[in-house]
Image (cartoon, rainbow, N blue to C red; front, side, top):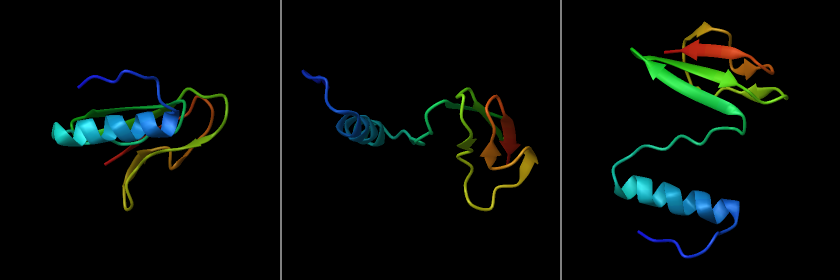
Length: 79
């Protein structure tokens, strides 16, 4: 695939999501400043933004560390 323009953010996200889906990849949209990692079935979310954010945990997630609300510099973990 080749993209010969720099689209607006919403269009760019839609294009990337479609290409990822066509490649069999699952995409999880993240709030700005939130990073995630998954190890041994536990997902960690890190808020590197200067404002509070919400962890992208699925409904019914069991939090092992922190919770859905991520303060600046906060970390949470869930299964």
